[in-house]
Image 1 (cartoon, rainbow, N blue to C red):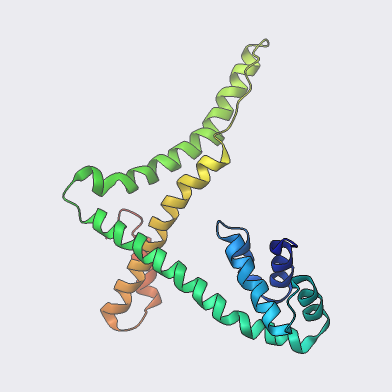
Image 2: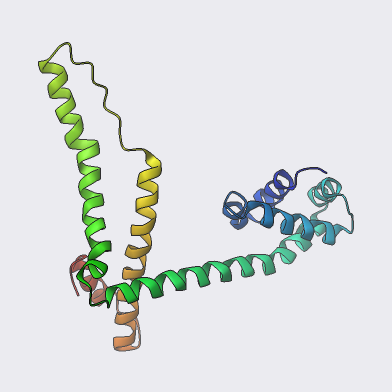
Length: 195
């Protein structure tokens, strides 16, 4: 059988770009099966490749395919929402913990992340250039921290930073019943250590 992922990516690229990130993630195979399943049901053909070609050639089928994928998109968004709600609940319980270590590990990592970036891309480069200039035989080659480490670290901190921002927006909204942009700018202006 023809691999479904290239067919699903081709269809999503042209008609449902919001699904592209789902077709390269950990559930890519499952999402590809669902996309191709929608394509075969829209065309009435069992062969995924023929379904793909028929949709590509027929504007009416393209519209039907786009409509049919809306339920899939909604289901995937709901899965993401449930996952983020779980993460948010975990972070809220951490922030209310009586344990100092549990309550402060994310903010500590946030500061450490910034310091690490600064040292890796600024301070280390200066030290390396000074050593290379001073010692002509200096053969050490500086290697940055691998991007995968930064991505993993930033992923954890990004969720924390994003939910903190939405908490501030929600608090401002619930205070007046509406969103006052001037007050919101003041709230965000307090910085990460603010209220």
